[in-house]
Length: 310
Picture (cartoon, rainbow, N blue to C red):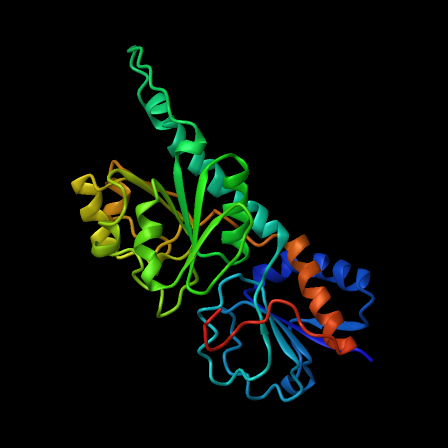
């Protein structure tokens, strides 16, 4: 039986994804028809970007699953017309990209590289960083991306603490959970990595109170979600020296407005949402596997808990 797969994303994405998706679906042994247009009642699966024109799922009466192209699902979980399974993107290419970006910036701050890169004025300044085992790193969020980053940092010798809202058990990582343990996790964070999902429960996780719980001069790395940070509170903590540096890849408004204070702050590094991108080749393999599973009557991978929002 042929699976009708609707590709619902911006037109430029079709150009990028069509060939990798066809290769992956062929390799998975799926019999399919893949297009950017079907009559809604003919669609079995939607390969989906939340910024696409498809926002009302009511006409898709035959729909079996929506397969998200993005790791983030906060812009779709509240859609009351979506009643079929929703799978988020968990892609090993995306994960590896995130691990590399987080590790690079964690090492940058740990080793004090900015002093060497930016301070070359003819003065011989010798600074010896501590060993990684003497540096506390906390990762807030222990999902697929947070766990991978925490494990990699621990493999380099860092003293890694992970925090999540629910209990986790990761060998080699000190795992804390729940609101009552957040202060302990913050207190251990000479380098803090934010990889929580964007939900009502996580908005402004970094605020005046929690920022004050960090060791003075701590560095913050946020490749997770912009709303995790109260921007005014972070700017105040940076000005006061409570936070030594913030490397930020995600923001409440993107692109970050040209007049935003982050651009001009000497202790802020802005990167343009590049920490981790979905890779068409590897993402297509994830999507094809879920279509195969749906056609075979097997459980879908990476389903979203609509109550939790991720």
